[in-house]
Amino acid sequence: MDGNGRWAKSIGQSRQHGHKIGSSRVYEIFKTCTELGCNTATFFAMSSENMHRNDEETEFISQLLEISINEYFEELIKNEIKFKVIGDTSILSADILQVIEHAEHETENFTKYKLNIAYNYGGQWDIINSVNRALANNEPINQKTLSKHLTTHSDYPDLIVRTGGHKRLSNFMLWQAAYSELYFLDILWPDISQDDIKNIFNEYGNIKRKFGLIT
Image (cartoon, rainbow, N blue to C red):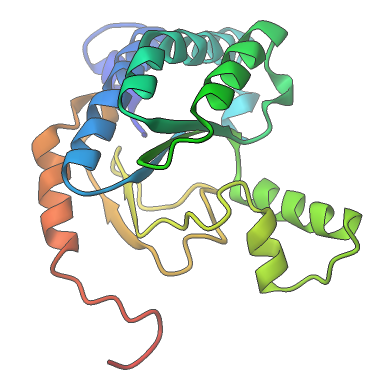
């Protein structure tokens, strides 16, 4: 979800304002995805590298995470959405962790939809974390074992969409993205619309995915 800061600057507002507006778009876009037949979506809120920004900005975004979970908690329950935060959350305050753990616990048995928020997440961290878990369990290091210990388990993305104009993954789901379809939009995240998502889904629907095989 790239471009919150640049969007805010373009209208003479603070980066915090951009993050606030960007955060408000997440559930709306998630609902659009579900209406188009997608049952699992992961939103990349903060990368491991983003956490090196100034404390004021990272603290503000962590507070937005807490506010958003509280705001949409009843929607998660009503619509049977399994909620999860993936990434190294150990850096978050006890209050925010409590809100996350409560939402995850209350929705853990839902299977209809899945909404993941990647916070302090990095694909490299995910792989290293998976290897360490396998080693701790004395398991062999192979594709099946590593896949089992990734934060998303079997939820590999069919489609990855990045806003903001940059054409790179920026350390997002490096293992899981091996055969994902990639879409890069020049628009900034706060400007993304339901029509943008519909157009991407329509184009994706016409792709024959072969996963390296010959059909």
